[in-house]
Length: 60
Length: 298
Image 1 (cartoon, rainbow over the protein chains, first blue to last red):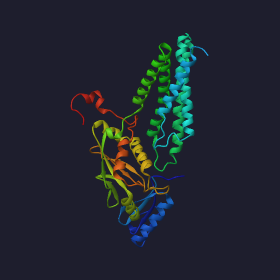
Image 2 (cartoon, rainbow over the protein chains, first blue to last red):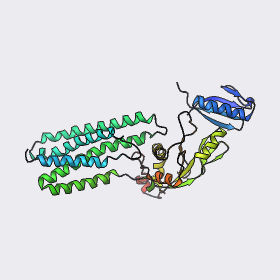
Image 3 (cartoon, rainbow over the protein chains, first blue to last red):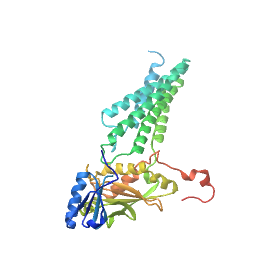
Image 4 (cartoon, one colour):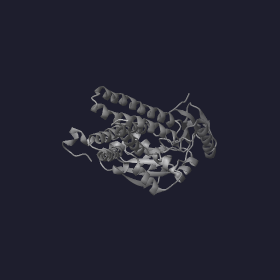
């Protein structure tokens, strides 16, 4: 099954901005970038930035 | 051997030569060398035979034989189906797919070429039988010219101006000129995109061109052709590195973002200008009766 056009994961350094969903809370910006890069490769999706401290992974 | 043997041989030869002339394997690598070609030459031979036989059949008052041409039509419609199916299957494994509009265009061309072969064989056999072999050759040359004329469609360069623009980021948004392409979240990806990416703006020359390049199939064809010719910096599992074409809603310009392996602006421009305008994408809004009256659309 492929889940498309859905937020597969949320990676953030500001957990208070996110409610629900598969959220990965990171300590630093570098960690956020690293986790997002890994998730992008694993989920075959694209990491999109909603703001500086909030990334989402979506498969198109 | 009878009086028809040489004219028939002549007509079939001309038909097969026409097919060979129209059968080019170019940068698209389609039809593939050698097996794909054999299929088309064989079908061309059948088409040539049908076109040729029609002439003696009429002369011998065997009118029932002409109904075989109807059989030919259904036979060559199958060619179109075959091409469509094959290309659709293969398209799933392309890094930058051709798109359905391009595939349909190719399939139509393959069907059309067989009818041109029938026409060429018919005309040259007819001229041979009615007059002589020399006029038969004249008929062959005329049908070659007609085939060439009918089979050369227009190019994108006829309807748009191509301009190179370096892609840039505003925050996470990737832009080509002022046209938004996509949102890239990762820093590393943004650097890669700035290093390898190229942007082009297609400026439509008139109102008809605006609708034609808006067609998603036409845009995909541009991306495919350019990725075939210049290579592409991507792999499976890197969906962020994908060539895209987006439209400026205000004035109908199209922004092309590509990731070529060979970063050569002039070559890329030449390739974009050389992309065929797909028959199925061409729109002529100015030909509409409502638009012909009153204010002229530009």
